[in-house]
View 1 (spheres, chains in turn yellow, purple):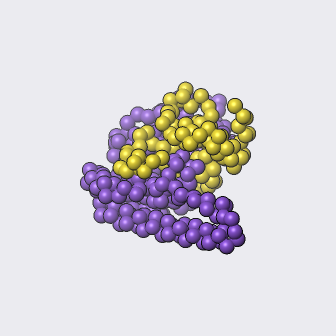
View 2 (cartoon, rainbow over the protein chains, first blue to last red):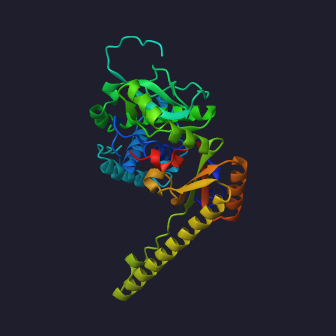
Length: 101
Length: 257
C-alpha cells in the first residue's frame, strides 16, 4: 500500500471481521457457570476465518463481500508471495495446505 | 410468558446482551434464524435472547463447532447484528459470544442477581457509542545490505545499522501512538488501548501501530478531531470503525467470571 493511500482516515464499512472478533470473542459480559466457551486463540481464529473466506465461493453466497478490494486477498504484491503467505497461515491454523493452482 | 410449543430437541437460551427493561428491540435474525429474538424483562433490565438447540450450543458440541470456521463466522456475525440492532433501541451491555443458559430460570436468575450492576452499567453508557481507531504505518523497509556484504566487517556494520534503524522506528511508532491517543482522549468520555493486530489478522500491508477504543458522546466532534489529526500526519493512516456496542466498556465486575 502506498503512503498516499494511507494519508487520510477512512470509515470501514462493513466492519472488518478482525474488529468484530476482537470484541465479540474477547469482550463483553462474562457470566460464571452455565455454558461458556473457553478463552480462544482469537488471532488464530481470525486467520482461519479469513482463509475460509479467501478460498471459498461460499462467502459470496453468505453475502459477505468485505474482502473485495482487499490487497492481501487480491495479491497485489504478486501471486507467488500471496500463495506462500496462504500456505504459511494454513499451516499455522492447522488447515489442509492449498494446492498449487 | 406464553407456553412454548413442545420440542423434541433440548433447547437453551442464547443471551446476546442486556438492555433497560422496556427498551425498543428492533428485529434481527439470531444465531438460529428460525427463533425469534426476544427481551426477557426482569426488574430494571431485560436480557436480549433467543432459543438455541443445546445439541448445537452445548459445551461438548461447541468445542467441535468452534473448529468450523464457517459456522463460527455466521454465528459471530449474527451475535453482532443482534447486539447492534439492540443498540438502535438504546443502551446495551453486550455479552461475550456463546453465552448460553440451559433454561430460562437460570437466565432470569442472572438478571435479577446482577440487576443493579447491569442497570448502573447501562446508565453509564446511555447516549454514548464506542468508536474504534487504528493507526497504520508503512512496513519497515529492509535494505538487505547485510546479506550483500562482501566482508565480515561490512556485514557487522550493516547489521548494526539495521538494528539501530529498527530501534528508531519502534521508538517513533510508540511516540505516534501515544500522541494520537492523548489527543483523541480529549474528544472521549473513556478509552481503552487494545492489542495491536498482526498483519495476518488485519489483512493489511501496513503495520498497525495503534489500536484503541473510545466511548464517545459527541460523535461529530470526535470524527472532526480525528480528521484534523489525519490531515496533520501524512506518516500514518488512520482508520475509524463503529459505532460499536460498548464491548470495551463493560464494567470489570461484569466481565469477569
